[in-house]
Length: 463
Ligand code: G3I
Image (tube, rainbow, N blue to C red; front, top):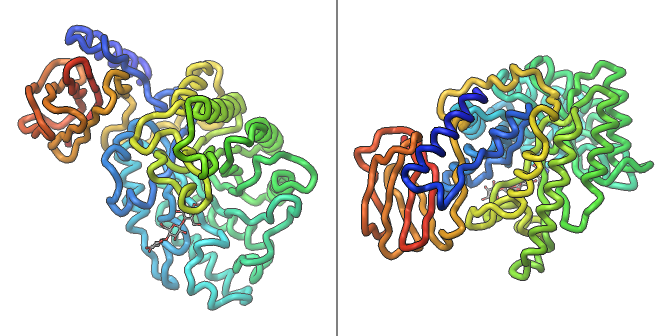
């Protein structure tokens, strides 16, 4: 497969040379190609807007081209999957699983036992230990059972530890802890394992990137993992959410230390919700140096991720700054890899630079090779090429909806379509606004839109 990828890239490169395209652009591998070669998973969430068909077409196009692991932002949580007692709603989660299968993407399940986003009806049983145990068991059996073999990994317990400097279990505002006690965690892992013995099972939390000091959340979690392993509780991974700010410069090395501590216990560490935000007040005033600093931090996290052999997944909590919980809920902004116009930021280049600086031969995978044989019913992106926008294409953009290619930023553009071997299959001159790509067969193509000296190339899939 790897050889095929290289050959197809070469073939496209050579063919594009013949069409004169390579003078404006270089074909680049995608993040997911480089991740897969290194035995790793790199991904982002599908935002709630995606589930509601209320997101720009660029979102999915970039998502499936660039990433090989996915998480639902809200749609696999308790309140979404069991809104009424013992009445399950899997429709949105199924939509994501189908999308992931069609595109060869691994699925993380988030989250089974969490104090937040619990369906309201559960509170009717507050303080009733036996009833709450039965409710949680039934929930886990049904949800994990429904996606058995399809969800590779679950956040079994999420955010159960108190905040920094007071590490111990979160004892207030948690219907599970207050009603059941700490045994809800152990039981949740056992029930999840029984429902899908092949799934990876994680404990997931925030502020773990603050280091292994005495009394810190990270130290407390390591102690619990030790206890769970001693007691044969089937935990296989820890997730560090890692919602940080640009000023948090020590956090990548803290994550490295946590990975090493967990390696000794035979447990994987995954970065599960990374974002590196700027203070909201700085919106509109950020310059190249700020974005470079953000890129530097992303690069450090990716370096740590690739260098620690027990790290498997690197998940960013969002794809584009146009859709991020940071602005709505956090007083932060612009923490992701793509800007609000879906243009890759320096952070994207930093991730690529780190991947390229860590050749596949030097990166160890915590997974057996078979994990990457994800059945794929559609275009899995492995033999495809990401085309980076030409710098000369400022203000020119396109998006495809069905067979209508809409162009913005041009008065009259020439539109050309090339097949994956670089052979011209369609050409139209003086196009204004949109072009109908009728008569073109289904498949992968490269589109070139140009006006004067401005060129824009993009890979599209016609379905
Ligand atoms: O579903 C309602 C909808 O009916 C209503 O119209 C709308 C109006 O605001 O609200 C909708 O619910 C929102 C939900 O997202 C779905 O969009 C909630 O208000 C909103 O609070 C909720 O926020 C989510 C948050 O978790 C809740 O805890 C964020 O989208 C989601 O990004 C965030 O994700 C969490 C992880 O699960 C755990 N770690 C932290 C991370 C960031 O907070």
